[in-house]
Image (tube, rainbow, N blue to C red; front, side):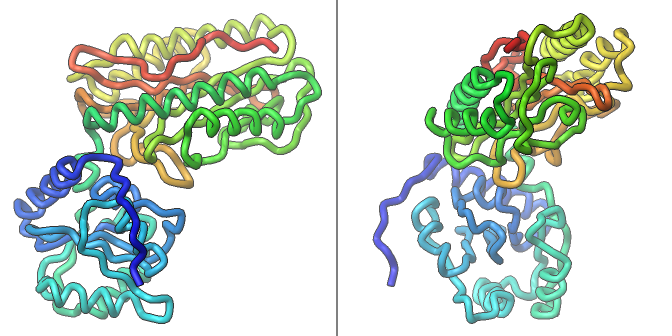
Length: 387
């Protein structure tokens, strides 16, 4: 029995059809009959489909011409009808073999013995799944077509940019609340909870990842997060997260200190601000990824702090699903990278400095490459917060 539900499309039908057409043009150029899109970010980009059950066996079949087909677990079928403009939805029951049903679908679409593309970079397209499909479809020719959908995702449409702006407003609300919650004796959890609650209250959908928040000596260890630790005078507190608006992200990183910051800490913070602003100043269409990175790194190297940095400048953001908001596999900003930036690209740039066993801190902005330069989408003070 199909539930009657009203569709909720994040984008116009025309935008979705345009995205599918762009993929089909590349398939035709490469002589590929169809591609099986397993990557949840790409499924969402092409059709609007989203689910919390992202680890299910599911894909979008995009043929060289014609409408795409969503192949979903039965429990997710209504999500396809709810979120997408496309009507061709095939579902599998929990007691059925989805690979066998995939074979039947591809035979019905007359591509079972054709040239089939897959996404070798998709976490959902495991070696076991691939082996099963090759066994079920012995007549097919397979090739890795990863990156076809990402070519479209790299440049954001006006509607996508608007969603990133709206996401940024929720991110900023959470950051403000979290900083206000920092005080001696508060726990990391207290601060993280304040930030997450305010982000959601400001209109965010479920977060792509829980807030990154760490303090004191633990703040010097990258990608740690809150662990019930009580804040004490002299602690640095590193905060980083994003809200989500129709799955679009706008991350922000800021830092605080409990009590008056030592002169050395304030000096290092000033270097970070200068480094981030140097990168923002050079970004425009035609500048390479490596040149943007070099503008930031040069300031840090001049201050003699490169060993406390040693990372890329930033990475693309847009559609986000757990466990991460980053799209750095599409394009990032790193040393020596010759790829050129183009209008419509959106990046999160989070330079950070760490002193082992003492402190770690950083700041960031989500930025848009415009026709004439760089627009900072996030809007928050770049001062080191003193609490």
